[in-house]
Length: 135
Image 1 (cartoon, rainbow, N blue to C red):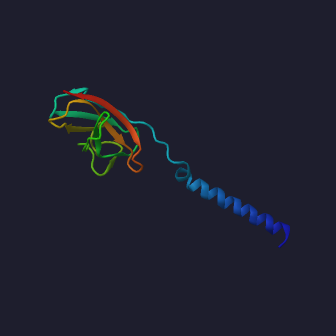
Image 2: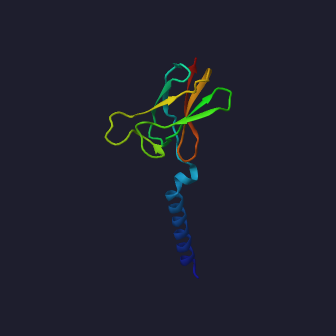
Image 3: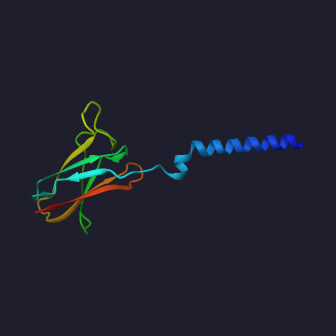
C-alpha cells in the first residue's frame, strides 16, 4: 500500500468518525433542558383542589405531576387535564394557548407546606416546582 492509499483511508476514516459524532451529538452531550414555567394556587383548604399551570417551554414533561410535602416523603400524583399520553410539550391539538393545566385534589389530612413537582419525560430530571400551603 503506497502513501496515497494510506492518506485516502485516513481521510475516509476521519470523515466517518465526524459523521458518527454529528449524527449522535445530542446522545453524546445530552439534550438541553430548560426549566418550565410553573404556577400553583398559593393556598388551599385541606381536601380541596390545587390548580397547577405549566408552560413546558418545548420540554417533554411527564403527564404525572407530583404533589410533595416540604421535608416529607408523602407523594400524590395527578395528570394534566388538557394532555393525552404519558408526556406533554403543549396542550392537546386544537386547544388554545400554551399552558398545561391540572386540578389536583389534596388530602383531607394535609396541613402545611407542599410543592408541585414537574419532571422531564425520559430522564425524570426535575424541570420545576412551585410551592403552596394547605390549611
